[in-house]
Length: 200
Length: 200
Image 1 (cartoon, rainbow over the protein chains, first blue to last red):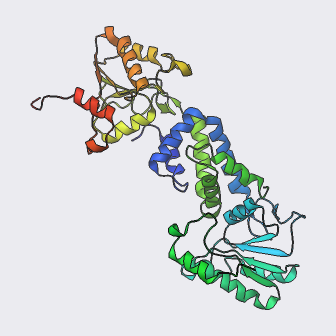
Image 2: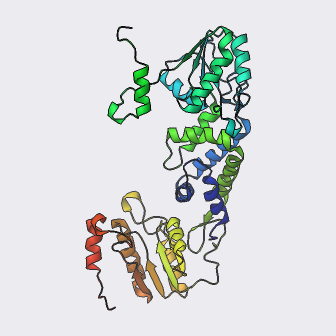
Image 3: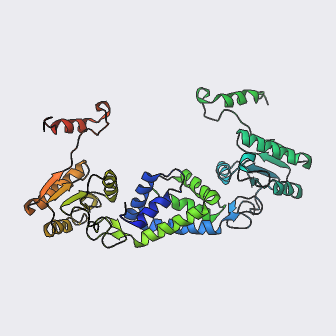
């Protein structure tokens, strides 16, 4: 239906956004046209700028428009602790808790030979160099507790085994506030096998 | 948290989209940066173009970048039938059925004095002029069956009462495929009061 080629195109391009189908895209397009043209212009500018200027931090590989990101250049952060995560979203999730004050290394994925993702793609050689050359004393493996995440963690453990740094893995078990009744079997089994003495 | 001002800004501006909160905006921003920068650039361009160039059709008031939209300028469409709807999304919904081949008039809202929306804002004077000057023989009131939609329909009926054209209202009742058990009371009451002889 050719009411407006520009609107048709907007509805189509909005569908590149994750979770946005044709109905939602229609609502978005007409909503912006009616109520928030200035907001939409700002969004267009932000999208354009971010796509053109944001690259990866040369140290931790998270997305940043600077060569060294704000976290890596923050002098107040602990240089000894290095936390390894799969994605920049994990960095945000951990930062929100404000409980970790070390540095990060972002893999941008997990090992998956079937998709052509090997150690090179995840920057593991850079990670190894970084751990050896910097004053890192502990590497925390915070990849996801999936099969591929575990394999990736194991691979990194092997790659760093002779570097002399302490290598730890974040704890997995029943989430705080979770109810056993609603937790999957794998997690419960993990929580049991990872149990600790209460006195510790 | 200042990891990247450009990404922070993108996450914030994405939240102007209806139904997008901060978590979804984060996922969108990082998803685009990682997987679809070209798509995001296209989206930025589409947004910019649509916001700058799309106005209202001078005849039916739907959104269009032309002075007269594709539907109004389509010679194959019935000029005698004029369907009045609240929003351009209603035009899309009706067009999808391909059962109506007349013309439209878009109110861009409904009468709501409390929000300062009167007949002027809905273009009702333009509608009255259009009905009188063109070869319209039937006006179909397709505003929504809400209190304000009904009031709007009634107001338009009054405004066109002495124009000599047939004024109809779309039927309301149990939707096709709907089950009585799950339909609200108001709709059922409407379906009963609007019942027709089966022989008709």
